[in-house]
Length: 485
Image 1 (cartoon, rainbow, N blue to C red):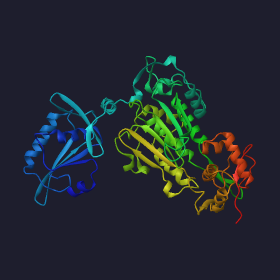
Image 2 (image 1 turned 90 degrees about the horizontal axis):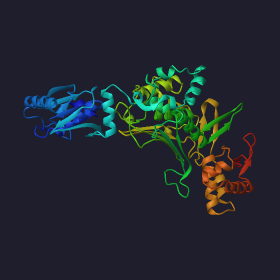
Image 3 (image 1 turned 180 degrees about the vertical axis):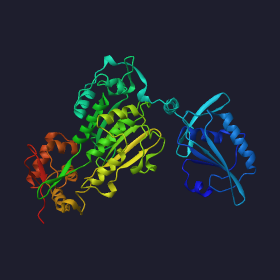
Image 4 (image 1 turned 90 degrees about the vertical axis):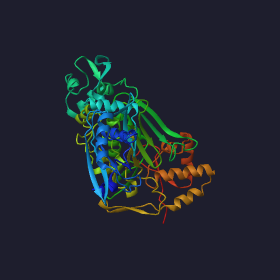
């Protein structure tokens, strides 16, 4: 039993001895465990996990129970067990996750609530304290009544989506059953978030396409940048449109059709953005949902960590039960066909990537969370493939895409142009590869130049017989010419 705790416990603190005169040193962990997902304190084991034992385990056990009763409010559920190994006594204090949060440490007229961050117990920030208060009241932010009157706001986007998904017009009584307004005609926070012109100003979406691999990409830092506000439905639709506008799709002809290979799986982006908008912590003011697109990846950031206090990077993505921070919002989005009640969004994000024709193991989606934030990273499925001497085999179509086109890069190096122009031509090829279809606007987004300058680059590439016009994609579309082997 002892060895198991020492080896495996993550929510765990070790104390070589019981500090009776300075009980805050360990009682703050009791508060933090009760306010979080629970945890364990082991007395008689030092920080290096060496068993040193207790001099008088019985007296220490009595002091632990007394001090918890005197100093922690409300009284948390816990189990205190003695253990002996190699002739040494220790005490194992297991604190359960509490329902009547917040659990305060009180002394000298001061009351402080603690939470766990990593392996430390720290004073809960104001927004976390508000979360704990709501949890203790069995309430959630989205069900609270706002100061706004229902009659002053329109819900055309909500009505449109309901009509599309159900085939029926949205009756006024549904605003009550959906917890959008209360019996006095006031909007709930759910209603305020779904109104066309949402009055909740920190419910916004910032979208940026950066030039490069980070936020300091060079002469032009942002290739595209937009801020959206309004109904969550507007934010969702505009966010998906932004990603589509800023990603490219390669394709390969087969005998009977063609295979499309987008930079990002649309399904994965959709699930990640829905999760960010619905499960974000709206008590964190001054922070919004962000979509950031870089050359090699896309990240979606939202305020607030996992609703149950765990860290996503320590969980099995394929087996995460649904814990909803905003259940009323989640229920409406489920009724609108945007998400499932079972909470399978994380699994869908990874499964969509695994099913992509151009998926590679190193492009596995990544998830990260802490107390204040949640982030999903989706890697560009096409990044870096055009310059590699390799073959991608698509088994279900039984074809191989040869991307060993080093001679194109050699030809670009020999262009009758300035070094800066050659560098931009290489950037276009790196992004588009041998199969990408592009025009002046695509080149402009890659290089950061004007559309006119992009047209001049196209002329140079045409003169060098490196690109050719293609039909069926609109006027002025080209692709690189496969070199003669």
